[in-house]
Length: 459
Image (cartoon, rainbow, N blue to C red; front, top):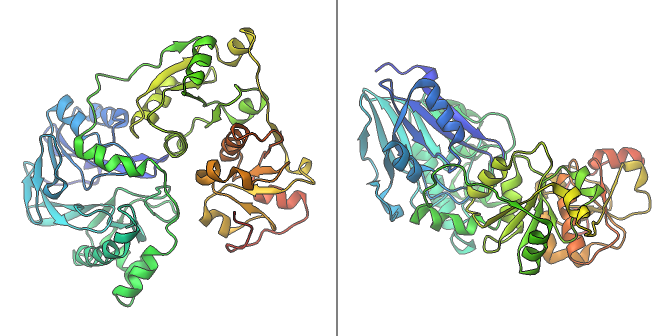
């Protein structure tokens, strides 16, 4: 078949920083690569073209989202293609290095590319023997390569050396071969910032700084230096993907809960997640609730900060779609969703229950307060307020004692800082304020210049 550019449909999850791909095979069938459990966008794209997903290929045992391959097998009868070395416990075709799958005109060839994970495969898409593009998953990504520390510190260097050889293998492909990675900007699997999510082999040979490394040792040093922390739920999902996620018959419902049911859930060890915008949470919230504003990164912070073993109740604003909460939770394996508070905070206060408030201050009203920056290390190093106390949000629950009395908590805009404030309040802080803005706003209001580098106070 002739392969046109519009036969490939990228499906980007900006919140997790990943791309799935839908390939129109030209005969009413499609190939899905690295599809996540939230298949709404994929089903919409396939429906527009009248496509049935005949094949679902996974490049590796994903640690940052649950795979949608099993669901596609159930819903579409898709044949699942994955590495034989992954030892998945559900029906699939296990591929080894060099094995090919005939897609009916196009061919998919498995290339063993360990590094990000042990069993990682790249999939080379061929048309009559000509390389069209390669689905590189977490091996070669735009201007980088995915992290190699997810299997533990004792294996990081070994896997980084494997990643070196995997990238060299991929760059032996023709320069005009398209590169279609899974991980991209925003992924905690170590993609650099930037807007480009696809590339070509030739462009990566020219622009990827890792490929400019003079030798293997230099490559390894560059790759393993400073990949940053990653969400706690990453440690659970690879095994969940090996077993295969449970099948769903549609969007799971988020039942309505009364104020008394929410109180009982909290008393029994459950958690309340307030998904409203930061300003709404500041104006009034359930004491002990955790603020995680509903946006693309909602699932990341849910999976980083709360366990998957306790029931969760949610507080929402009127305009928020509960389906978005459900899918962000389910795509990272959080299924103990008890429901949401019917009527929101007005129902809570109408039932006679106390609400708490949090100061949400513009920069010019923060004088005299210590400044706690809860952004990631790379963001902090790129520019921070002089004298900042730096505590990453993901570690704050354990390091809450390091936050000074009367501090103003800040991030880039205020969403993560409100989450941080809610965690500090749960830990007993009663005088927390949140900066409505970011470090540049604070510096301008206080006559300061941002400084770069890791210098600062770290607990």
